[in-house]
Image (cartoon, rainbow, N blue to C red; front, side, top):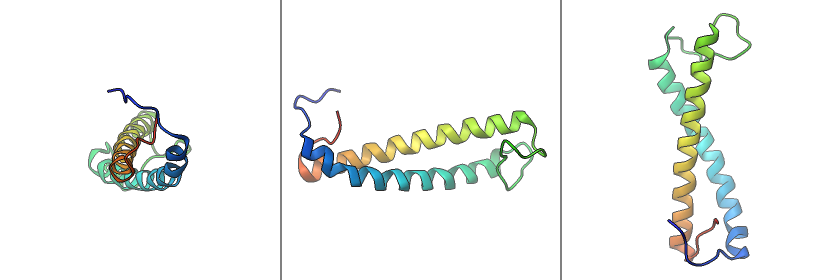
Length: 98
């Protein structure tokens, strides 16, 4: 979907704090969501998520956890960013991106 009018510089500047706050919120939300999903999906059913330098977890589990965490983060961030941009457009009448 393309926008017919160009975004003004002022809209981009006004959106920066909104984007910053939404980035923090999406990161926190993605972290909580990942931990809850990992508790259920974990092969070892460990409460902790495996980290690369922890020797008690096999490499396969670490790689799966990292891939899942990345996918969840990217999805949540995209949803929050898009929602923030739509709310900004609805409020101020201009799309903040592009």
